[in-house]
Amino acid sequence: MPIYAYKCESCGHAKDVLQKMSDDPLSVCPACGQPSFRKQVTAAGFQLKGSGWYVTDFRGGNTTTTAPAVAADGAAPTAESAGKPAAESVPAPAAAPAASPAPSSGSTPST
Image (cartoon, rainbow, N blue to C red; front, side, top):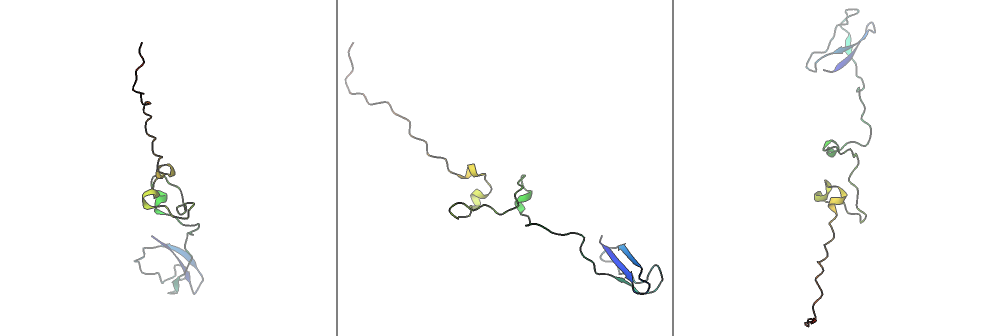
């Protein structure tokens, strides 16, 4: 429930009141009894600072609060590689074919 600030226009009495949003505003001053108790306009009780947050900040322990890095060639990461670590997104080099034995000359040495 929000806290509203009230002030009497007759006697200057001020009071903070915890009320539901659906409750009618107070109008009678508790100090002098006059019907001049008015709700005041006040600033919010919190401030939003910083660059903001992303949905990924709260998934799987990822604590990054900046946009995804751009690759050296200027291309943004693809959706496929966005959630993977850098080591997994780089394709592995092709394995070299297995070395085959040297071909025989056709003649067998005799003993």
